[in-house]
Amino acid sequence: MNDEEIDSEWTDRYRELENDYKDYYKEEVRSVNLYIIYVNKVNEIAFVKKDKILLDEGKIKQELLIGIIKSNKKNEYKLKEILKYNLTIEPEAVEILLLKKNEYNYLTPIKQIDTIIYNKTICIFQDINALYLIFKEKSNCNETKKIIILNSKKNKTRRKKIQ
Image 1: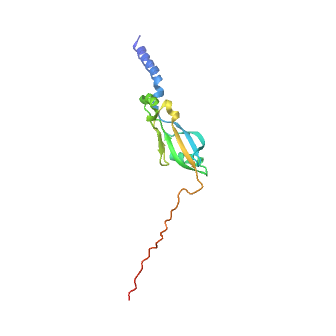
Image 2 (image 1 turned 135 degrees about the vertical axis):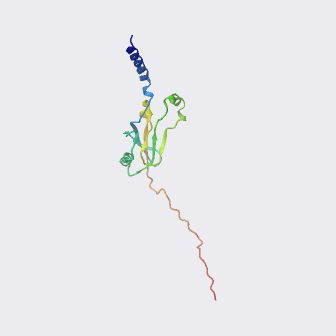
Image 3 (image 1 turned 180 degrees about the vertical axis):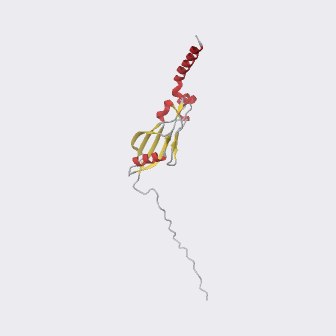
């Protein structure tokens, strides 16, 4: 054997071993599942729409998010909540995640309509990342009520006449 054969064998073995673990490396999120959930007046899910969003460098740009919201808004429904699910677990912790499912929470409420950033995810978990838009059916009555407090005693100042 010469030196070139030894070097080649070592790199080939390394590539084979490394190939077994490639699914556990973190990668940029390329797409997320979009779930549009419509909830009726009695807090029951009326129907759900599912779609897929392609991300731009791991982001859902504000303009795209606004477009998605507008195209899925119905007259009788109002956007109540936006939730982002981004599974960012480290490869070393996957086994722990499987054993202790309730200790990890990757669901984040989005407070304002802005660009949403997804952090890198392990390759085999890419399809789990999602965005949830929850629309609630509007009620017939006003949600805010104006309260008027009437005072039975009128505040009047009496003046004494000076003679």
